[in-house]
Image (cartoon, rainbow, N blue to C red):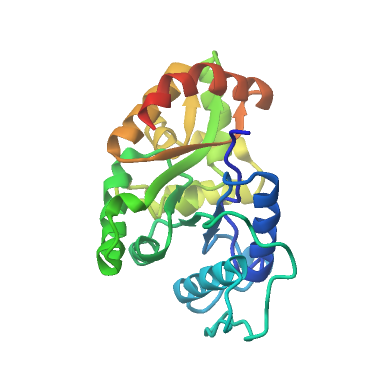
Length: 281
């Protein structure tokens, strides 16, 4: 009755906008007023045999228009370069009772963040726990909010990454290093406040591709770990959250595996971390 639920995030190149809309309508029927729709350009698409759109920012803007058209019960169709709907197309399912299902765009880039400032409700920085990047993203978003004549506070900033919390902070950080290695070579290139040597990123990626996560983890320093994951004791993660909210984040997502065991990690987050930061969000 309280949890917010939604995908963070879906790529329209993988799931068609009409299907994203249908799934969003189903979620909204199960959790009225507590859902959202997260979309992004995505990563690793080519490695999985998925061809991304030639103009991903245009495609994402059109995808959101198509999703909202279906969920709003609009008429007249949608005409786009990548995603179009004929005039007669209507949702073959009950429309959500909610007047508006929030849309979140996942991005690190200035152009897509500006688009989010125009049309989205929230922007997510995925794979990051770095407070230094939040003011930069805020400036990116402001370009779009000013263009659309929207108040800056209309667009929230979510930040999320791998989370491993345990009373044994060192064991938690060791597991987090292995988890972070899976995505750090991608996101490190996007964070303009962090200088990761290309050679180090390549070595991490090569070790991951060879399924040698111990070797990959050994290449991740404490500073890199703290910028790209939540890890350690409950008090350490609470301190990370305090820095993120102080920098301008409006929501924090704790990613899997949550702890040395998922259940214990979720328990610690719910009993020790969330109560300590609830007043900040």
